[in-house]
Length: 362
Image (tube, rainbow, N blue to C red; front, top):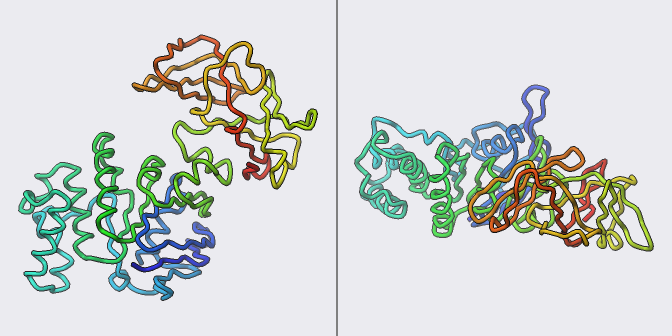
């Protein structure tokens, strides 16, 4: 499979720059997921790779060969669209084989390839049904199958699960993860859903305002976010943030606020220190555990405003220093709304971000 490289890739609409000189290499057989909020540029980047959008500046390369000016049909790429784009008057077999028939492949070859892919996707018994006779999940499989029968080296997927309900989306996500291990192709996938990104990707590319904020494995992005945006976007429930004052007391660094004193042991060995006396402290909801009155340092007290029961877990929602603050707890704990509680955190689980740049200090 080819190595795909984006070199200073830029896209402008008149004077508005929507993709800003991004550099990225996608390894062969890698499942790469672009994720970010609406308008971040992820779908535009995908469409430039597909050849559906022109490149303003920079290049797209496959195995060192520039493909920026090639027509979509000449790029050895197949694409699955968000809205499936199935022909309603054609049955599943004809929808899946459309590109092969257009390219005048031998009939026996077409039948063999469509049958193989249909079997892999669980569509064999539906080959002669029309899209209107299929469920949403089955139609999505047909759209995937149509792309797979082309046997292109790279498969592009633009929010393919977003039209499905929550239960079916979870089921299709699992099926897609299993399928990706079998087809041995480069997959480039776009979604706004960070859970999809975390569960599917070999590597995630987080975008905001046309820039790549960070790229790496799901674990790298969760455990070592490069900035506040990535820290708040990756992980569910999202990371809590507090703006506190950083002080050095008896050779130890602390983050201080009203009734808050967090030790910051990693700050002593950090490559850089906050540029101002204040810093942004980040704590994941799962890093907090029930504390007691004897926990003075590395603890926080708040009143529960909402208790979201979700089965084995509950999410407690409150407000600390005017900011929404969440804690994920085992639902065996019976925390009542209106109750004032105290939670503690291990200092090693505290993140520090520069107040001005929002870049991670550690």
